[in-house]
Amino acid sequence: MTHARQHRIQVVAHRGASEDAPEHTLAAYKKAIEDGADALECDVRLTADGHLVCVHDRRVNRTSNGRGAVSALELADLAALDFGSWKARDEAPDWEFGADDRADTSVLTLERLLELVADAGRRVELAIETKHPTRWAGQVEERLLLLLKRFGLDAPASAADSPVRVMSFSARSLHRVRAASPTLPTVYLTQFLSPRLRDGRLPAGIRIAGPSLRIVRSHPGYVERLKRAGHQVHVWTVNEPEDVDLCVELGIDAIITNRPGPVLRRLGR
Ligand code: G3P
Ligand code: CA
Image 1 (cartoon, rainbow, N blue to C red):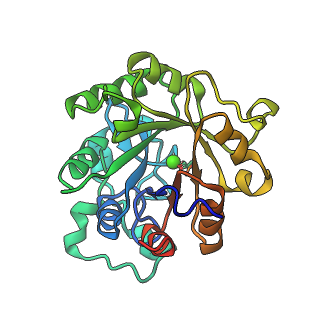
Image 2 (cartoon, rainbow, N blue to C red):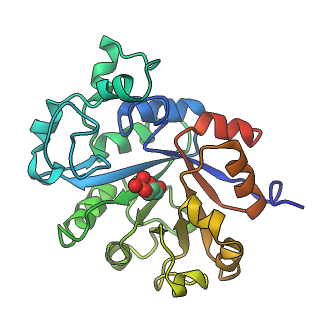
Image 3 (cartoon, rainbow, N blue to C red):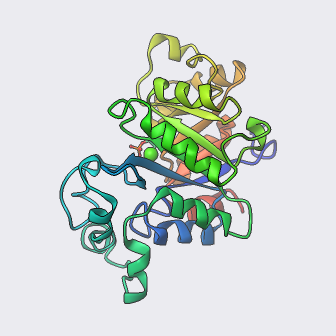
């Protein structure tokens, strides 16, 4: 028997519906909501003038027509850039980019993304990943929690009720979040397993494991050990039908994918 009928797997749009539209843009997140994604994943970085923006790479070179590190640019510099055109050029020639899309393909602030989610008309969760948290010595988490507070999301009654969770490869970043907001769920992302992690143990206080698909595939029994230790398991980045099926078999709690529409269909939703 599989776990398919036992619990509903959450489908999380990785950087938005990033196969179809340019990652981390409003266009990609609108598409993910339209596709029926349960949650949206985004990476956040601090600009030189202290704004949290949704950008994956340290530099803007790959996903915009500009150059330079996010941390060295101000929000106004980023707002002048085009974060959309590269998609049609490099990855998705079919992606329609019209004049109406321009507002949806400028740099996306986390604040704007929170507004989008608040106006979605249904529950859409947010999985926010802190990038380069060591460089800023706590400022990323501090700004993040201040922003969440403005939306009434920083101190959920319980982790289970929270529509927002914070993810990171940095346990230190997650501990900062937990110290300030103990009920906000945290996800420890991993792409390599230390012997301790291999046993199914996570850094103290963290309840959700976020292993890569490669780990899940290459370490039989790992998910079961995590589950036995009482952890939820959120896997990234799951795009292929056979990998969706594997996640169902293993009883994974959340699938993080660039293709929320096809994944939902594969799950029969
Ligand atoms: O959702 C976790 C995943 O996004 C981590 O890897 O490099 O895509 O941020 P990355
Ligand atoms: Ca990420």
